[in-house]
Amino acid sequence: MTSQLKPVRVPFWGPLTAQVHGIYRRAFPPNEQIPLAFLHVSSLRLNAQFLAWIDPKQPTSVDGVARVVAMTYFQRAHGLLYLAFLAVNDQLRSAGYGSRVLNAICEHNRDLPIFLEIEPVDEPGAPNPHQRQRRLRFYEKNGFELTNMLTEESGDTYRVLRRGAQAAKVSPKQLQRALNSMGLGVVRSRVSTD
Image (tube, rainbow, N blue to C red; front, top):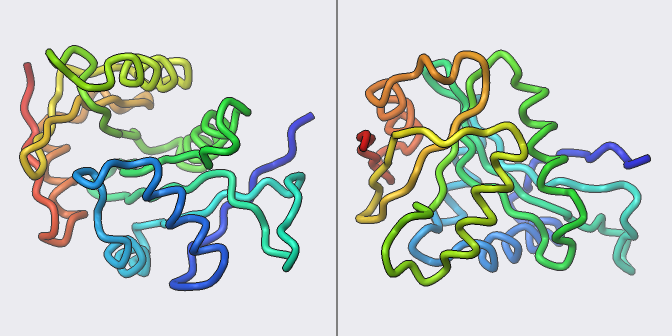
């Protein structure tokens, strides 16, 4: 039987924070990263959560600090939840932590449609086509479906995935309004369809 994962708010500093920052920097290329200070400050708002995920069955470090198995950052706005970042500790991949984190988030927010973005899997000349396909399969296995919506942020294009009974009712305009209300003007999104 697997243990229950424990979500912990990421503090501004300390050993737990250092683990989360490391996971984030290793998981996302620089063009996809938002400054960590922004994630910390915006998570002070009630609608945002910057979380470290702990598995109590994982051994702690010599100084007693829990080992972070994953990190997430998500916000709720305009009747939906947007999962901006999910990364599993690269030393613990393929152990089911990504699915467990997603299921915990979805279960806790079951009344909200959930949206996230991935790199387009059909982009010609993409440097990582196999990784993109694996990522899409992972999210589909966890109940997300591909939409015809695309987002453009800072010159990069992403494909939108959704999950939840009400998710199909969210229009591109509604999603764009929600995404732009979350960014505090730091990141602007344009949502279109193909």
